Length: 345
Ligand code: TLP
Image: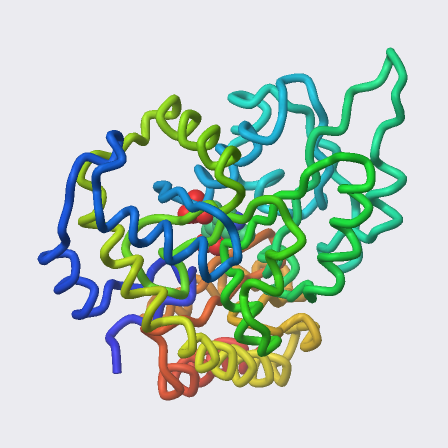
């Protein structure tokens, strides 16, 4: 049992003893010179798992997406993506500011672009129009509650983009959650996209980092952008070592987080003034809304006072994320806290 039950994000996970051990012992070198054996091992391992030629260790998911957008596009081009996705909403407009691209956000029912939407959004050749430079997808979809896009849905969208010579980037910050939830190899989700970023620092519990995977020439361009953005990291094997442990030992256990999220969601659904779409709870994210003025604040503050931390995702919505530092007993305890707070609603 842990003292604080922290549902704010799976980024809150602390490194495991095995990770700390691997970090202490990591064989390292200067990674800007491509001489850090541990970073190279993580990159190769990630690329192999996702069926790509090469990998690039980056500081964060945000940086992975940014270097990918920059490496795929030219300034002035347009990027097609879902309106609720992380790249459009939560990456400080980095792609616009640093990549010089224009975003073309489209409204979707579950966070996933359809093949028709992509077909209709790709710009025809015309002197007035921007050129479509990239399509971005997100799996699992954070804003829609950790929903999963199937490999087949991904393939159908990518086929349309590729038919117009437009590459596809996948923000797979929580890609392994989708793979575990749908019981498919992670490479099934990445086969049809040109590049993918996944995070070792979320449910996989490593302290820092993400890996971008793609074709060798794409990764070479992404590497130059990573350097431009100030993240040539020298003896980065110290942190990459934890990423290796994450990939080797922390993927299968994500299934436990999904069970805990489901139990939490079903408990929340029984509370007064709480509304939750249980079909959206497919992995480790639980989003729900509170239909009572000031209710979000009451829940966030009331729960925090009893050592349960939740994230106010909007004026009427709360997000809870399950992860390895929250077990089944914690879910029971947290539900008791939420029941007490909402008892008089
Ligand atoms: N998301 C964070 C916050 O920024 C909201 C979280 O706690 O969930 N893509 C997706 C789908 C993400 O959810 C995130 C992180 C990122 C990219 C960015 O990763 P980092 O935080 O490593 O830059």
